[in-house]
Image (cartoon, rainbow, N blue to C red; front, side):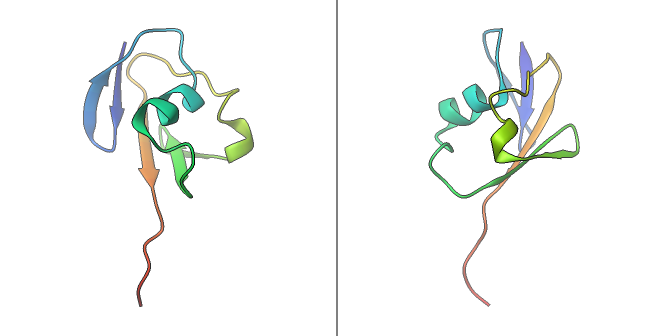
Amino acid sequence: MKVTINGREQTFEAPLNLYNILEQQGYVSMMIAVARNGSFVPKDNYVGTPIQDGDEIEIVAPMQGG
């Protein structure tokens, strides 16, 4: 299945949930905010959020500075 992550299309094996994507991309232990198809997904829902072919995932990490 094809999933777009931060603007880059990638291919994954189904079935898949949001946690699987984050784990494979190395984001699991990071402080991040995630949106699936434009909707924010709370961290408690990562495992229960299924990923479908064509989904768009945005992963944002806070930056220090000011």
